[in-house]
Length: 160
Image (cartoon, rainbow, N blue to C red; front, side, top):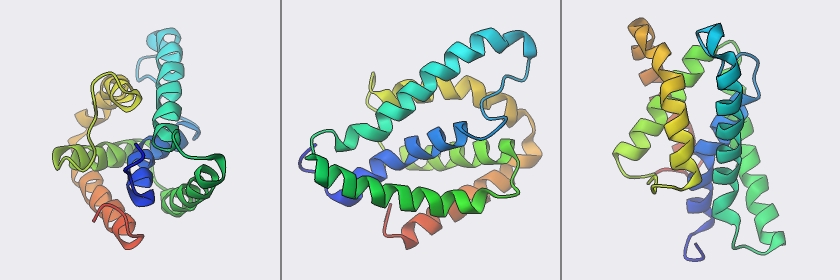
């Protein structure tokens, strides 16, 4: 990955980092059916491990000083995004991030290489996200929020 710019590294890490951060909020990745709770705990643990790996992968080849500098920049971007999450429902946040990722992968801004940590995380997330998509009234709001998220990140110099 040494041919990547600092911006590209942040762009690769950011979706996983946002999902990892979302997982720290109460009620994130909770199964709709309580009977699935035991299995869900294992799935969520694996999901979080994959997201953590996907967040750090773009920086693995850097020396520690450079890695820390870029990770600080990533942290600032994440904090600016999370500040907009106040007062939003968990379902709304999950759907927003899903549509944000769908846009990035659909336009091939973000490539999910089979077997990589982010690909594995997305395979875990899809079934978890599906129950929210039953409530179509939230879809338009989530699509608009995903567009606003992209606009916010573009103002930060990302995903242009």
